[in-house]
Length: 150
Image (cartoon, rainbow, N blue to C red):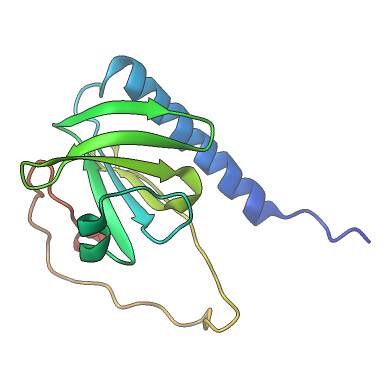
């Protein structure tokens, strides 16, 4: 029996393909101009590789900043590997594209958000948003995207 076209899943695949292409260009040529990324990922998603101390500190999600200092960026079909600086300590990460929940390039006001719904969630309920203006993040600092929402 045919169930119809799953536009939501197709859009997620297309958006993750866009992230893969952007990250591959950065791996090849570096970040152009003022571009930088805030990437929020689900730390308990299968395939996410990170130091135990980092996962203990961020057991649900983490927002990584790809801006001033990053190294060893390698992009594959299913995800990317990168080394980032956490408190002057380089840490390698592996991020499957399916683990990403938001991807933001604030230099050009571009962002993608991947919605996930479970049966027990109320679709009409919205999470409260902060009203205060955010402080700019420091290089290598892990930030919550809630700081940037109005």
